Image (cartoon, rainbow, N blue to C red; front, side):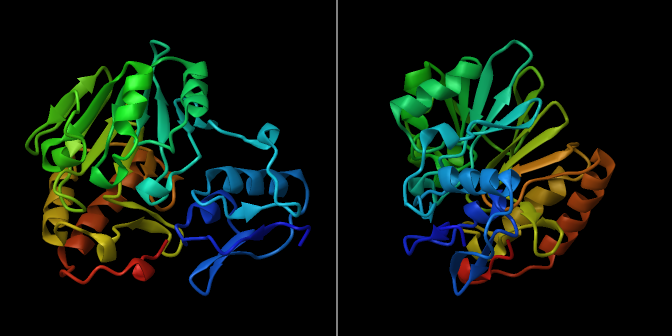
Length: 289
């Protein structure tokens, strides 16, 4: 298979499969190469998967990755870049850079930390804020905020994961935190989960919901809801009619862009489905990515 492979460090986090769908698939509880790359587009997808993979399990034939092939930060849309370099300390969560009209940026959740990476993110503009969606993704927040000279945001429900945050969101009411950017507390996955909405276009959902490639629809990770599935259902019910967006940009699971009216309809249907769910034991293998 042209030498590309996934080694046995894989923790089955789905990251590589997001960047190289069809090339990398799930089998026997881990990611595996499904076929060799055919042309530069496939090779580029494999390099994206390799540099995003939190365990560096996606490797070319000689096992060595050339930094010149690192595509991150990767433009996803004019206003958003994907950071890649996902961290094991955040269970492989995806992080993003949100570009603002002022030329500044906000980082939503964090990639793994190194000073080289931190300097890289500022080449497209200074980072003024690091927005944490919830406790699971807080590992590198303070280090990035200090490196950037940025404000670190977290919700009070997850404050113990970032006790030295500069800005603390409280309650369940939406809060405007910058022009065009609103924080929507969404307790459920954790007590302090937050969704960030930008420009009525980008919806950074953390682990509250995602796009499932299996079902072809919005989904909640009910089997890894740490706090309360009932609270998540109530949060989604409050969000219906208040959120308007085109892009769903989660920490885990698929990303997707659809017309805002269709997203709104799908969010309403997700809220209704979630209201029918009952608590269940945590089971990482049951999530339909």
